[in-house]
Image (cartoon, rainbow, N blue to C red; front, top):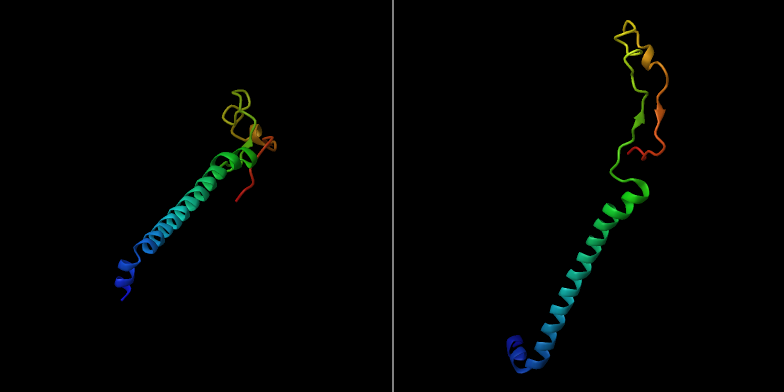
Length: 93
């Protein structure tokens, strides 16, 4: 009975088929655009604002040959001071 209705109402069946195809295509296009925008936001926009995918680091004073631990008996006087931090760091996760 259903197949007979589809065959007898060819134009209605054709428009129904076109409607389903357009709907599925639109849904796939919207999902692809949203996923692409998410990737763009993470890779480009967020990296520039908050430094995503960066590691926090601290700068330490460089050891010179005159103050290195090996030249002053190894007592660590060269690294006794507190390290200075960089100007910008990213939050730790």
